[in-house]
Image 1 (cartoon, helix red, strand yellow):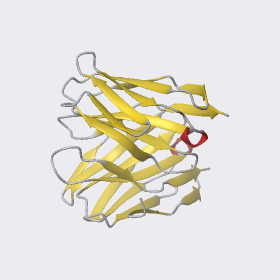
Image 2 (cartoon, rainbow over the protein chains, first blue to last red):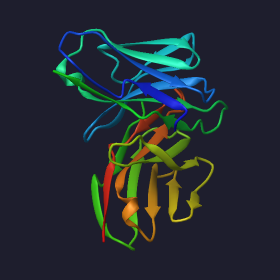
Image 3 (cartoon, one colour):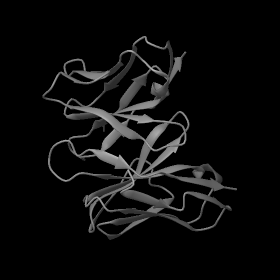
Image 4 (tube, each protein chain N blue to C red):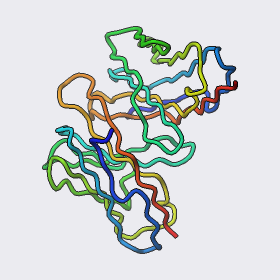
Length: 114
Length: 112
């Protein structure tokens, strides 16, 4: 969906560098998520946030941190990048309400750590 | 926590035939099951979803069935077309943590 944007779309960095991936949405959704995608491993949750003051770890949060600057913005940081963090990263948002909470994904950021 | 297993990992069918992808989940309290389609180089796109109070849902050529007793759900695509070629992911939503757990994906190839 064009309502969920990610920057940068591609990034090559070196081991040990700090890097930030940004996500913005205009859908008005309260919940935002960061996923990592590796071949054969599906989508794995890194962090998620239910509102500006709520941050939760996902299944693979080690080596990552996040910041929810506003309802519409959710950033993912790699404090000291390592090669096995090379992956495709997706931001997602989900609908308000108690049923369904359909998730919508951003276009992804392809990160390469040399 | 929830665990979702998806099979097969790859599936090849002739154009016009049907394709079925199956997922099992571990948490009987999970209550929402979406399916996503991801074309090469693109983002995952929601194609159909089902809630635990429904046994089957259909949308044109795609359908999803849910068996809560056995804790499995399936995606059915009929009259397959070349544009159905993609990776498909199932997911289950954990009731407690309110987050999705994804299967490992199925690469579907439609042969002309």
